[in-house]
Image (cartoon, rainbow, N blue to C red; front, side):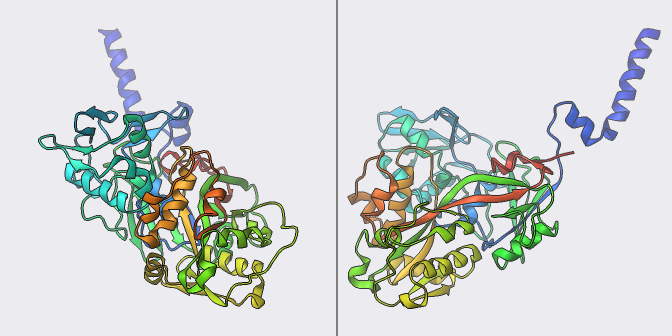
Length: 444
């Protein structure tokens, strides 16, 4: 009996002590600690997040924290199921994809076959248009709850396409201004930006952080001042405005997408395919690297200023990052003598102009859509197809091994540079360098 009492006493003592274990003790035992708020000050719109919008810079940065796709791809390029119940299955009528049972969004909405069908059709009309076109229009499977059927294709190819963030699953009635998904965080818009809090219904587990407070900065300088003054945990593009923050480490989490310059029908013959890329190739773009762009390292042997008609360069007025790039690009194209005037416009105006092609020049952002060969070219081809109602998607062809520069020489847009997620951070948060925000945690 005395032995049994001793065992019970030790167990009781351990249980009483458990609530008072420090984060350091928990971490020392190999468990990732929970808690903490990651503060971000970003020169973006931060008004909403749309995973299916190819041009959404906010989605490129925060989408992975809010949404999941049906599949993911491992380090060896092999697809595996995340929201799907297994890999696509070949049937006499096409490829069947089943949704896992019991999934809920951050707002507590149950996901069903109707949600999956409409979500994939929405993605097919948006940024995943070229990715999903080879497989046809998905339809619900009669008599099989949670299933959709693609008319054609190979199972592995479809799984890789459905691993793209542009094919993320959203509920019926989805609204980008109130983003609702199955990712590790739930999103609440505020007057100053977006607040992400741990998602209790997350399909693959909630984030380790309590919250991510993403605030809108009016310009790049304000974003850097916030980091320098210890008001932010990420220095966007650099480690400080006037001086580097002490103990800050460099961060480079990879390419978010590309900043592109498109030519519209107001330019007449200067809107011909290939003109935009040729103009950019002949311009000294080195100064744009300070704005987060990876641009050609070599300066053109004989830089040539813009020789086309005087025109406006449209840019989204909500996004200081792109506005700064537009102004620097105008200088690189010849400054005041080029006849190009930067024109910030509301997002609704930009969307209408982009869709109709009724503009002279337009500066835009195009997201990375995947890691498969040819995905970069697919993204740029999809972007160029918007003004043609998707015609380019079905009438253009390219080799998956062809660099995207070769593709843009056949399109009415050119790549200014790749926008990378670069800057600085402290050791306070672990995992920022991979930018898998659901896996980031605060150091005890």
